[in-house]
Length: 108
Image 1 (cartoon, rainbow, N blue to C red):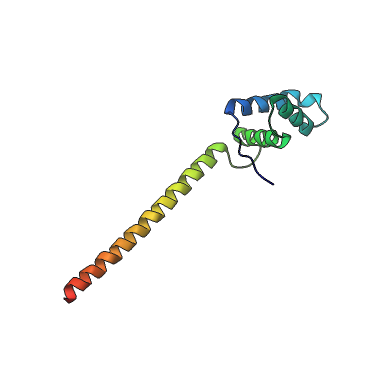
Image 2: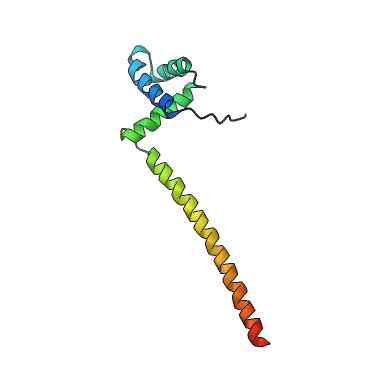
């Protein structure tokens, strides 16, 4: 199964979440409302809308989980950590190189 990476604008996501909240009483389940909203807005699947609704609930504090802001900060910190590890490895290698060069110079 191939996975298409399609980015939807934040405005569309917010609109879909608001629409689901507004039309859910008109449907037998929230899932049915999500399917209808996905179809009306031209979103790939109801699952996409479901994820947006759940994330909005987490961001609002109505559901436990990692908020969008926390996810962004975590990604940034992981990138920074990886960069610092690479820099540390470079410094260790350079330090070992210059230490061995100094020893070689002293032995001659």
